[in-house]
Length: 138
Length: 130
Length: 102
Image (tube, rainbow over all chains, first blue to last red; front, top):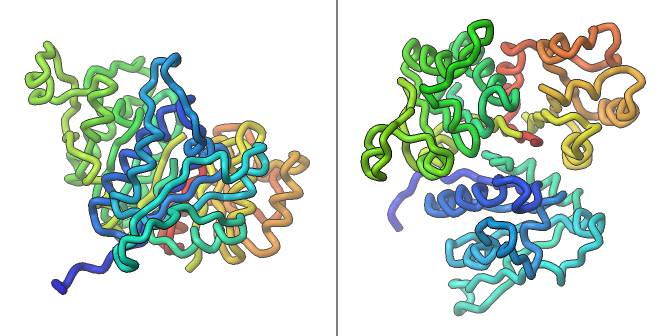
């Protein structure tokens, strides 16, 4: 193994609904770039941010690019941890089945297809946030 | 200590751009290093040299340029966010056949990788946004 | 040291402060800047939440933002510490990670 510089824990925090502002779309661009840097990258979706992952988004009539399909490629970009706050879902009348199924192929486990999303409580998310080095907030 | 600063709002629309400037100035005054200021989202408007605020208001763009000049700051504007919003340097304008460019002195246009690099290299990354 | 949370939205307009209060750990710092400083006035609807948070977290308000909004220091909740921009910088050096609640 070649020696590599120490990596940092990056967390991209998504708290805004998609489309109403451009933050979600441009946050995703930042995520994909960060993924290219071989850092320990996680994403968190909470508050209105959970709407970014809702299935069945159709932006064809609002004149804005549809970008939620890109989330399905996160696994291919070596993103392994996507946290979704279940309390934010509940507060909005959503359930886990309303969200896009996100998967990755686990190289260490004979390329088994695994779920990318980890459902977390706010108490768990607080600990996760606290363990980061860099928090990119959108 | 080395700071990375991310600015996501335009001047005059949201205070965050102005707070980012005040923070950057204070950090320098306290003897800290600013590794890079990265302008993303509407933050790219901080780099428009065509900004002409009324004379009794601070010209934040000029202030950024002056601060960059005085402290050799690296002010980086995200190319994708900038092109979406009509913020172009001479080279980009020429490449896209535009008849004007508006990048203020002291700023440079580059990619999002510059943000990630700031996160890696700086001791603290601080986001100013809306 | 723990995380410094930075909130810049009015709690009367957004849930940024509410989320920050539920997602910050004991020992963390919470700095209120820009419109978020309207939270600290005695008698505000979120005063109780801030007082409860102050039992295990430190809450700061950016003085220049209080001044800009006409919030006099003697009208703010006891226990909230005011800092200037240099103090803001100091807080960011004293905490390992910074999280902005936008």
